[in-house]
Image 1 (cartoon, rainbow, N blue to C red):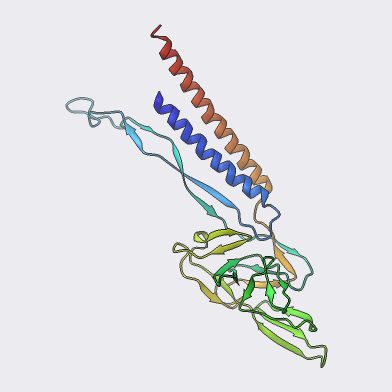
Image 2: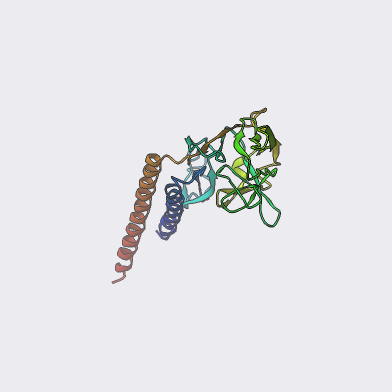
Length: 262
C-alpha cells in the first residue's frame, strides 16, 4: 500500500507540471508569435510481483505476468511550431514569416538568437531592432529621411530617397531554419537559442527552397487555441484530483491496518 502513496504522488507531481505548462500557454494567448508547449509523459519502471519467473506449475507459465507500475514522469515539454494566424497591423516595420524560419538577432554579448516576432523598430541610428533593442542580422539601416519603406516577400528592403525620388535598396533580410526546431532552447522575450538537438542552422532568403516568405505590415499571432487550452487545463485538473483521491484512499487503508493492532 505504501507503493500507492508514491505512485499517487508521482501522478500529482506530473499533473502539477502539466497544469503549469498549460497555464503558461493560456497566459501567452496574446503574445506575438508565441508557440505553445505540450507536456509529454512516460510510465515509470514496473515492479514484478511474480517471483517464480511467471511459472504457475512445472509445465505452465502465466501468460501475462504480474507487474505493477510505479507511476508517471515527464519526459519532455515540446514546442509546437505550427503556424499562427497573421494579424494585419499596417506598420511598415512589422514583418510576419509565413512558413518555416526565424529572424536572426544579435544580443549585446554578440550571441545570435532567433525569433518569430517581427515587430521591429528603428534605433537611434536607423537600424532595425527588436523590442529589447537587439539588432536584426543581417543589419538593415533605414535613413531617417527615407520614406515608403518596402519589404518584399523575398526579404529585399527598399525605401524612397526624398531628395531625388529614387528607390534605394537598403539590404536583404534572411531567415534561419533548423532540422529540429523543437530542440531550440526558449530564452524568453520570444527568443530561442540553438542547441545540439536543434541541429545546425541553415540560412537562406525568404521564399526560396524550404524557407517561408515575408509579409510586411503583419505579425504572427500566438498559435495557442484558447478553447483547446482550457480543455487541457480541466483534464489536467481532473487527473490531479483523481491522483489525490488515490492518495487519500491509500492513506485510509493504512489507517485501517494500523487499527488492527488495537
